[in-house]
Length: 186
Ligand code: BEZ
Image (tube, rainbow, N blue to C red; front, side):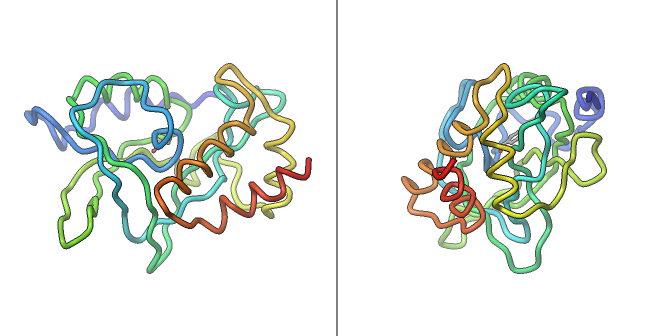
């Protein structure tokens, strides 16, 4: 399944002319930054919650057996913890390509705590993209993750690495940790 979002993302001109932009990572970007960055800091965003509702046919699964990876879903009052990276604009060309299967750039307020908020970018796969799988029980999500694997490795590793990284940041995420608990039984 391939909805190619590269062209749409490259029309995003919000930060044109900026030498550096803050990028908020809430999924693989927390534990795997395969791009150069100037600085990185733990951060959070408001009004969005992390969910394993996006299908992965090109990284952690295949067309025949898609995996599940993180996206963000709007939820009043929610906070999502992650890692923010200060990057140069060339990094977005790399990420637009890496995340072409449904993720679109969105401008967002990134909160560093103590009242320090900056506007930056986040990649979100919304419900209307072709690879979106949507809600399922955490048990069923774990079952799917346990059996999926793709060019970037086993889907299980993605979930486990994310859970470890969140623990290292001292952050709770009941959705991620519930899937991790089920996954440990398979
Ligand atoms: C992230 O980890 O923030 C991320 C997830 C999917 C696409 C791009 C970035």
